[in-house]
Image (cartoon, rainbow, N blue to C red; front, side):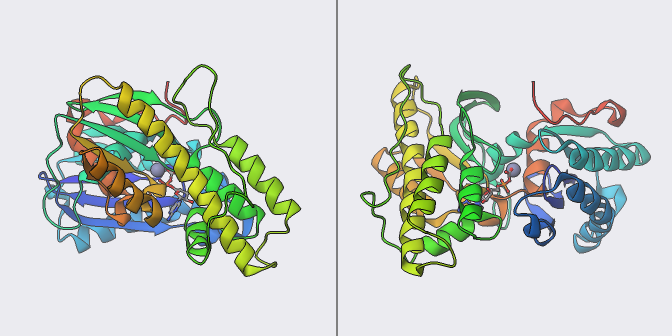
Length: 339
Ligand code: KG4
Ligand code: ZN
């Protein structure tokens, strides 16, 4: 079995994965309540919480997975990107465990964890990875489309400013909804009717025909409209619901706009499109993605909701794809950024 450890942001997570990708346990200690009073993640609090939870979680994962230390053949740990203090807790912990057990340690790029996560199943072995797939990673820190061929990842676009999840969070915070804002906007929007006349959020285009994302314009526009029209949790509930529905529609519309461009440009046809990251838990997006893939005759892979937000099962699974990186635990280095 492979032990996965994830501590890059505000969830401490430990998982045990069998070699066929079956998730034996995937424990997550969420810190959301600790950060909520501040309206976002406080790095120092995150590090301390990881320190308090990591080892108890490892012990519990082994007990609940009916495993012993001798069953663990290697450890996969998120080493980048993320909050440096948070990453250091996971990396140092994993180094100590791997060194003590005399087993290899695999450093994992958190993004690759998300990229492969749609292939994990709720029960039983993971789905086989196709020869080639397009991956859309949409989270609090990232918005990018990747071309994944035989496990090699090429970035096709990125965001020039804010990530989509971050945009959900900041606008939600402005109107007084609690952190994290994505699920809150989705919930409020369910009672609303999208009205692009009242809340105009155009999809931004670049002069250079780039397929990059850009969310800062929508963020600024949403905050301005909310201020002008008095949209908040203390105001008219229907106006808030309509605002959330329109804003969510605009964020999602940009995803499809760029996906359409990239799909037309990409040479050859990937057989599958896999969506990953916290924002992939959004129900409206999931329904539209199913429709889009139906229309374009491509198989869609939507991750189980439990594997959308940060978790160690996806890190252990990325470890299986990156076993060539397994090595001396002392050589693994935590980095806040990649490259
Ligand atoms: O992948 P993740 O747990 O952490 C990062 O690696 O960033 O993603 C967290 C992000 C947050 O911005 C959160 O608001 C967003 O995912 N999110 C959602 C939903 N659930 C989580 N956004 C929209 N709709 C949701 N249902
Ligand atoms: Zn993440």
